[in-house]
Length: 126
Image (cartoon, rainbow, N blue to C red):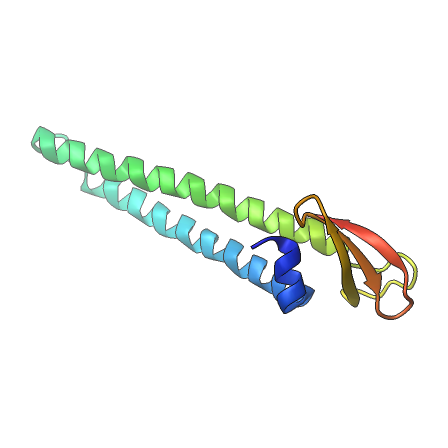
């Protein structure tokens, strides 16, 4: 579902809240993957059989890969939500998040909105 569809269905504030919750869930996943990585480091023994060493190494690599992916998603979702939120204030009357979605361009990523207070129209880039 595109940003425009989500905003049209639930409103800007709910969309923004959802984006922040999703980004912070990825932060939790990052912390859990760091715990897995530290657990793998603790479980590694040089004198263990080769198969056990390979298994621990594979777990460490998987934890690191998941952690990097989670960090990337966390930052991307957070930055996107903040980028849109900085544009949600009416340039004319400075009302924050009190606008209606009028039109969408470029697959729902560029929104034309109208202030509910003063009627001013502007674009929000997603």
